[in-house]
Length: 271
Image (cartoon, rainbow, N blue to C red; front, side, top):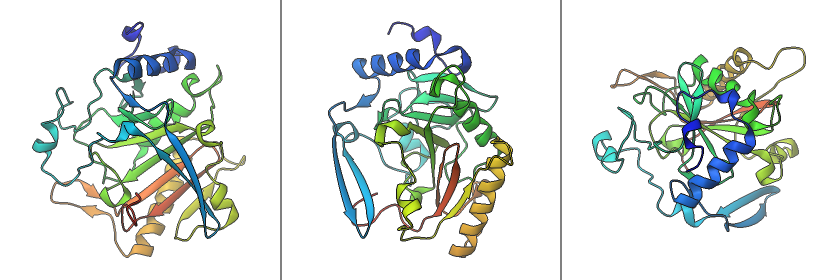
């Protein structure tokens, strides 16, 4: 793929314009390195005042979804993983995100582009709570020109599926980011209409405090604590020696962060 040498887990994110990354995404799609169905079907439904958008993508048919098997068996399908990882990123890695994370393209993309923010340490796990390094990586991406014009500050939605009951399909700790323009640009429509049928924690970022990784981390920890109280389950160390947080989903952009406690990955066959 032309220009592929510009990319990699140690490349400089701020040297990569958005147009070049999009061209790389297209090249990865054309070569089959990532799966992306350009002809996906979109269906919308309104149920009890809540608007749902479903994307029916042929690219997801072969996506693995297994978080309970021993790690050795999940790694068997991954030709060249990082040590400890069950996510194949070779050929899709874009740039470093600070000291602890790197940016890659999602191998089973639903959006153009669809990013992964992964820990360099492949032994970090998806059931661990987010920490200061995770939010530093998020802000490195949101403040980069990869998500917008030269000044950065593009409109992207970041999300994290914390644990199997939150819908994660891989255990290597990672967050995801997608462009808001891909789905109409308003991720908070149902929230603002007040039709959400489940508990959640919301914190809006105001002009009175800077939009920073410290601010985001503080709000996230407040949201996680609220979720722990609502579920009656606390974050605690597991048998693997890592902290296990109760299942939860995180959504955030430059305007707000929402933390949703989860009791199941899906309902009625919908995740």
